[in-house]
Length: 118
Image 1: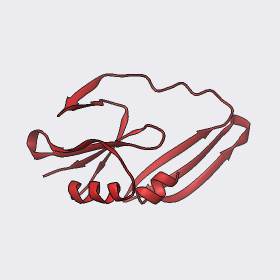
Image 2: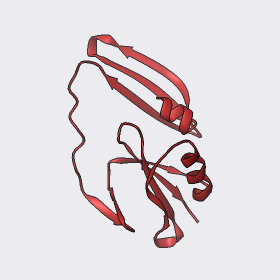
Image 3: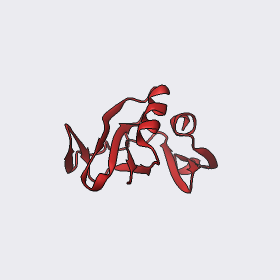
Image 4: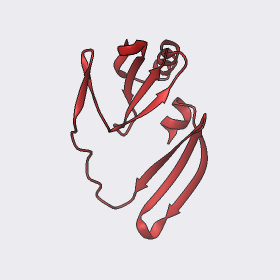
């Protein structure tokens, strides 16, 4: 939760505790986006599987196992996030159609993609 609020600038909008299910959830929001961050207590959660990937520059990214956020200035955004300790596994690159992308992971290993559209 701290990564999404302190680093990415989301605000907490709601918290839910479902003790009987061993689940708690915190919902964070920013700029019209809302993400549910789930915490399972006492249950074994399967690890995310290796899935199909596409090649981008020297890196590859999962096709359907990541979050994507649009940004106005990918260079400024990556510089800001690096200042907060974020390590990028794909530095900003330009792909087809003038689109720029960059990738990093949150503290749980969720892949996050930044996209700047021309």
